Structure formats: structure tokens, C-alpha cells
Image 1 (cartoon, rainbow, N blue to C red):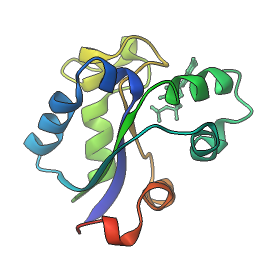
Image 2: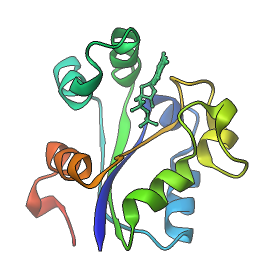
Image 3: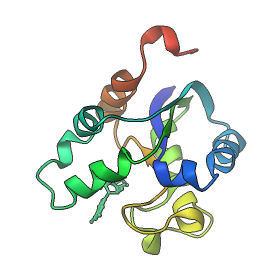
Length: 138
Ligand code: GDP
């Protein structure tokens, strides 16, 4: 069993894609064990994406992630990290496989609807970053 962090980003929430994303997660058999809507502060978003702080797109990414609310989820299942990344598709929707969330719903490489942890260590950090143990219904 694995846990991973999923986020419906501001563009996904604003465009009304929360339901479609949740539907795809549940249809795949992944279990949502925590869920909350939040307007990220600059500090919270910067801390979350600290690995990207030297990248040229960092300031744009933080502005995007704080422009309107996100939906935060913790998912659980066998191989949950790779399964959720598979449902999401490639970072750049132009490279995403047909039938993935990003291929179907993303605008561009930045406004790409969803986030998912990419490894067990980042999943542990990211789930803990947003959820207290008592908020996780595992
Ligand atoms: P992910 O794990 O697939 O989300 O991709 P990354 O960890 O590489 O990047 C984190 C997020 O930063 C992406 O999901 C995009 O929202 C954004 N991003 C990544 N690459 C670029 C880029 O080249 N330009 C811009 N503007 N945003 C980017």
C-alpha cells in the first residue's frame, strides 16, 4: 500500500474539473483518504515547490498556484504514486498520452490541472506538508 498527494490546481478548480478528476481517481480504484479545499498562501506554495526555487518558471508557478483555491487530496492504494501519475499524464499536455487528465483538460505546461507526488520520499513529505495525521482517514 502506498500514499500520494494529489492536487487539483487553481485552473482545474476554476474550470469546474474537480468532479471529473475525482471520478477518474475513484474509477481507477484509488481511495481518497483525505480531502480539503484551500487558498494557498505565497509562503505555503513556495515551501511546497522549494525544489524548483532556482528554476526560471518559479515565480510564475507560485503566482499560478496562489491565484485561486486548490483541492488537496491524499490517495491510497497499491502503487498509488505511479498510478496517479499515470492518470495525470506528462507535465506538458502536448506530450501527454490520450485519455490522461492533462491531455484532456490542461491549457499548457504550467496550467496543467493536477499535481502528483513523483516518488515515495516526496509523497511522504507532501502528504505531511498538507495533512495532519488526524485528517487522514486511512
Ligand atoms: P510535475 O511533477 O509533472 O507537476 O512537473 P514538475 O515537478 O517538473 O513541475 C512542477 C510544476 O511546475 C508543473 O506541474 C507545472 O505547473 C510547472 N512547470 C513545469 N515546467 C514548467 C515550465 O517549463 N514552464 C512553466 N511556466 N511552468 C512549468
